[in-house]
Length: 296
Image (cartoon, rainbow, N blue to C red; front, side, top):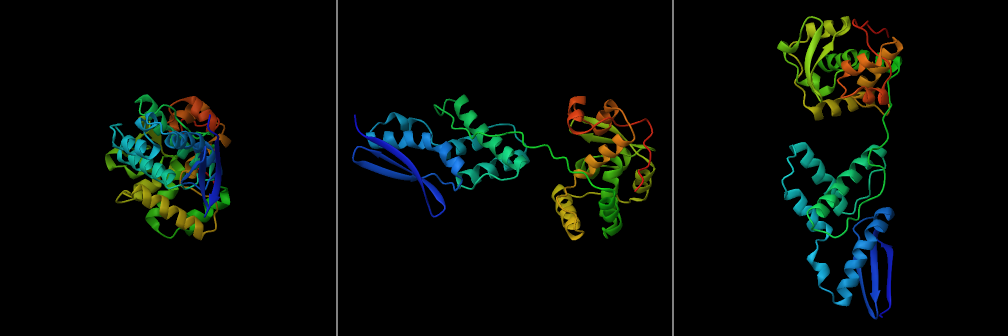
């Protein structure tokens, strides 16, 4: 039996695998500078290199990961464009050897999408074994909320009047950015809105502050999603508000309703959650029939 040895090493910030079979030796780039990823890829690449050095041909019948990615992206999955773009971005970064994100949520998204490709290969019998990346696929729940002082600063110092109204309306209603961006006048009732959210159509109640904003907003907002995210980050950065995202306005709305002692069942309905359990994970008791104005 021939002597076999395999080891990984780093060269120019990239991890490589070296395999020796008898007197024959070969090295291959693992295309990553992340040690954990390199360790996970090692068994798969090692088996391919041993097969190559030993003269076995049956290994070549199964796809290597780059070709698997190509076939996975060309297959029919019924994805919308945004989903396709996300898979393409994550998988291309992985193939280029870029390390996984350090942010827990972003890291979980990357792991989930990379492993989905491996699972697809197994299901379609294109590979014998999936070398999936271990780790959390859910990420940490974001619990950032704004203080009263941060809200006051936003509401008083965002100079773009229309965007200022958009931000205040999001906070006073708890509506998602997309729900507000897709609003039309026929969806605006006296003290409520009819919006189309993640769980279908739902009614959003309007307190006095929200009613006043929507009454004077003409035309209604038609912002793109990327504009809202970029504009909001630019504004809060200018104001010195750190670790801020637009969606945090919705979470702050929920937590302020908690202070009013509202029931979790009503908050679940108000926020358009798919179940009360979702609300329990992120919020607490919410909502009365009439939503009182928030005092800052």
